[in-house]
Length: 116
Image 1 (cartoon, rainbow, N blue to C red):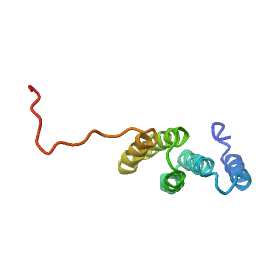
Image 2: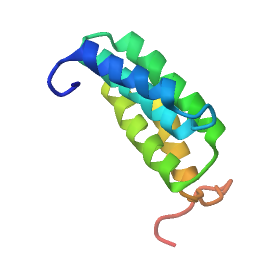
Image 3: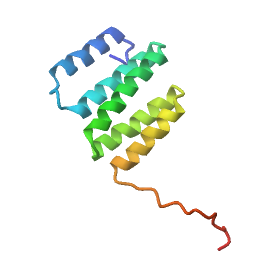
């Protein structure tokens, strides 16, 4: 429905899915919030989309780290980038990496010489 610009039907499908979803299905609920954000963007309401994306972030934060959460974090980061929320996108990219088990190397306090 979203791809066909049938926004009311798309929202209805998301709402029915969320009503049927188990309460503890944080990943599924985050995907629903993300989809609601995408619908809002398609309708020209980026501020509303940002709220849905933030809801997805909170749900994912509660969900813990796994590959599915990492993928959704990555998708969410790209969606946040699309609406100009660079700070939110950076945080989501970092959360995607952390959910995938990646860690940044420790930072050195002294600048490193590129020729060394």
